[in-house]
Image 1 (cartoon, rainbow, N blue to C red):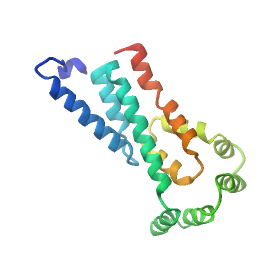
Image 2 (image 1 turned 30 degrees about the vertical axis):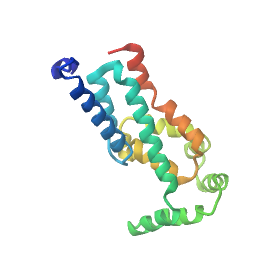
Image 3 (image 1 turned 180 degrees about the vertical axis):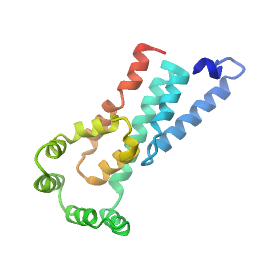
Image 4 (image 1 turned 90 degrees about the vertical axis):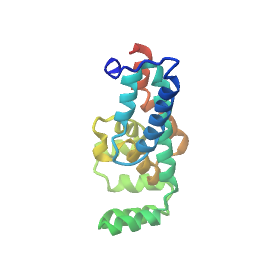
Length: 185
């Protein structure tokens, strides 16, 4: 792909290439933070086009975008979420949000575990940071909200503490950029 695009950085085009990379990075961060946008492909395209040299930038941009989406989710008022769910006729989900709103993180987990069937759902709630990392790395996760949507819901749920969530995101998104850095391209 790099050869097909003739992406050669020379003194005559260095500024244009730099501007294109920065514009692509800003677009990538903005799009990845938006639910249901499969923006990870932009990051993959940047990695494919520019190789290992751009991998650290793509990694940092991915972490930044997912943390931004998570933090936005944390500031969404539960009442607004309940109203939205009611407006789209998801009454059971709205009722769950109203019941969970006054509860602490541990009480929310207990409430969800109480109504959850034993097995994978209970395991996912108990090991929620591992489940978050797996969801972020699942191919086709755009169908369940994409990385931005998953991080937004994690923030809105109130089940994920900030530091462990940022740590989870930091680890979860590292395999692809790390592979580019180690293996080169």
